[in-house]
Amino acid sequence: MSFDGTLSVSEGIATIEVKGELDASTAPRFHDLVDQAAEQGAVRLEIDARHLGFLASAGLRSLVFARQKMGDEVRIAVIGATEPVSRTIRLAGFDHSIELIDA
Image (cartoon, rainbow, N blue to C red; front, side, top):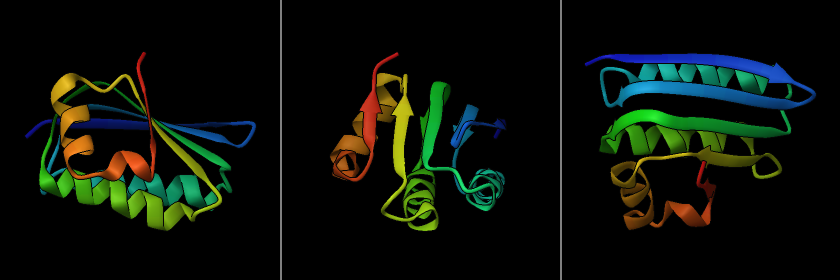
């Protein structure tokens, strides 16, 4: 499946923009971006999900990976998630561990 992700860091805020589908085949690329954000000492991680069309269970596990990798002191927000993506996050109850923000 297609996936594209980019990372930018400014003033302690890491932003990962994701496009396409986050599933088992694309999760390793997302994990690499999270690793890079953690290495740069981000105090907030924003995941721009406006162009993420699908979040599989492996994608949900990737968000759990991000929560664990960044640590509890780092705030994580998923911004602009489509209804199917935000529904998946809510059904799993993961919206209690991260912020879901409408764009």
